Image (cartoon, one colour):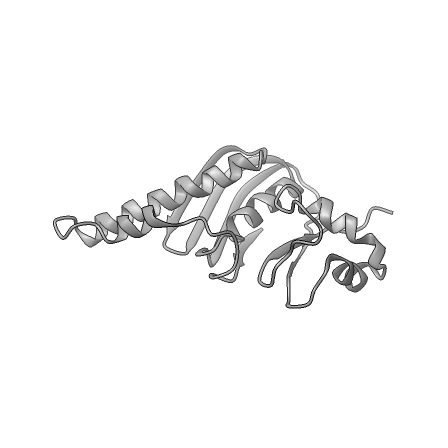
Length: 165
């Protein structure tokens, strides 16, 4: 799929005291070691997000460099690939995700949409599908990241799949 950009300061607040502490380790620790430790902690936290959402991906590997993530692995469907990318990218502090995940059963890619202030899933469905009542398609396409169709926020990136007629 490639490189995806996200709003760095929008999304789930995942990185807290541990990554800040690693970045501000004692003077005896080199700045390179502190950065490496902080990136390792971010990678572990992001892996936890993927696991908590039960996203099916095999051989998951991530390279974290501050606000950029390269993600590797293999999954059965394009939808699961896109969910993994969005789960990582919709974390506060992540600005880019370089997707290098392979898909066993390739299918067409969904469109991505960045939520704006005042958006609702119905409004987005009306824009993409011409029918506001198709909002459940978008909601289902973004599960398990979305738990409630009314809880979206500006800066969040959503999958907009093609309609199956």
